[in-house]
Image (cartoon, rainbow over all chains, first blue to last red; front, side):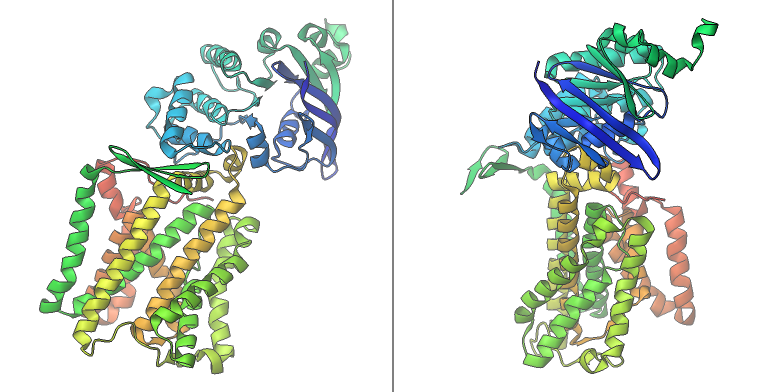
Amino acid sequence: MAPLITVRHLVKRFGGIVAVNDVSFDIHEGETLGFIGPNGAGKSTVVNCLTGYIAADEGVVTMNGVDITKMKPHERAHMGLARTYQIPRPFPELTALTSVLASSISGKKRINQSFQDAMYDATHYLEFVGLFSKRNILARDLTFYELRMLELARALATTPKLLFIDEVMAGLNPGEAKNATRMIVRAKEQFNVTVFWIEHVMAVLMEAADRIVAINYGAKLAEGTPEEVVNNDDVIEAYLGRGWRNYA
Amino acid sequence: MVEMELKRDRIVIRLGTKKWEWTLEPRYWRNTLLWAAFLFTVPILAYFVSPGLINTMISANIYAAIAMPLALMTIGTGRMNFGPQFYIGVGGYTAALLSIAYGWGPLTTLPFAILMCIVAALLFSPLVIMARGLYYVLLTLLLPLVFLEVTFIYTDIFKGDTGLFGIVPLLDTGNAKNNFLLIGYFSTALMFSYLWIINKVLKSRYGLIMASINDDEDVAHSIGININKVKIIAFVSAATMVGIIGWFYAHYFSTFSGQTYLPLTFMLKILLVLMIGGRAQIFGCVVGGYFIAFLEMLMIRFMGPIQPLLFPIILLVLLFMLPEGLFGLYRKRRYREYLPTIHVRR
């Protein structure tokens, strides 16, 4: 598989703290790449750098051979990068349908797309995530699970090539979490997107991910298939601490 | 080339790769037509009953016509501008100075007033990108006050202490009462055209894009909206619309003084129109404009010396009692479609 995104020597510093330290990896087209690490490892910072939300200090990010390191978030969105947030960030005063409509209008420069045409698209994405009956409810009145699904619909409505998912499980009960996972897998199949998935719940990634990249203190620890990564001593040490064997 | 296509219930307009659909639904026109007819019959009634009412109506229309672009600006930039009267000053002074210096009529000064407003707004438009929250409020609050000082410092040009006079009037039929009536209609038409334009913009895709910027700028950026472009366009166009009101004031009164429009007291009235009408909903601006203009007129007529004290108190009480504004009372019952409102931030 050809790499869709290549990240080379990515560095991001916040003052004296090095949040991301020389991270390099590829994202291949059509795969599900899991991204794991303990709290504060720099996972979300990497996503923020890749989507242009914050500027990287050093390093090169290319997409299909095009250098996107200095691009603005909206230009990256037009190229096909979409993201969801760890804590849902809906448009509180917009209804569910209009939230998705906003991204289906502005996600790409589409020829011959009127407001009404975009509305049909938005309805489809809303139906896909199962929020059609809530289309006229303001986003601030939705439940947490519905907000997560709304974010997914909003991200999908930009017709991305690569979808960044930032901890979809956080704050969901087991039933909802199961639905959410199934929804992402379905989205991957139906809309032919590549998924970059940050997650704390390993069971989910073991099942869904094709490859996993693990980082700690901003630096890459391991990369490989899920089995390789969870059996990697460095990864286990990062999660359980040094000397974990004494208690095993 | 623009292509137009008339379908059963809509007009489809194509320009290059863009496509707009303009839905024609006469069943929704009734209320608009009724209100327009009402507002256009009031001046002629007032003409025979009490011509002073036309004056109040003109102020009401103009308050609404300032508040509506301010609503557009607030929604489009996602920031509360506390000094839109700066552009009243720019438009008004441009029209007044040109009219006095060259004896130009209102039609000749209008393009120059618009041009100056565009230039001034473009000059200050980086504020909407650089400043956020409280800093933006403070900076925009200072602009008109600084301009007011400038009119006093360069008093030989701006006549800061006495005001400029001798501006060519907007209309002159030779009869003061007829002038009033015609200007009453003119202000109603101005208010209606602003209402129509801004309503159309806010209900279109551009309105939705502005509403998403108003709600969350960063997320709007990440779903592919070029927020800087949208914010600057919203800022400049709204500022220009406010500037046209300055032009109107200068030619309507034939005098223009920064001291009337630039201080905070005038701005406070506009902000209250915005909030009492219904948190920057544009139909609410019209309701708020009429409410405040007529309340002010009644207070001056019947309350006498305690008016300056009582007027703000009544408005503050209303602000607490009706958080969604006067128009909110109507919308609560008839919730049909999304209309963007101010998103109050901490």
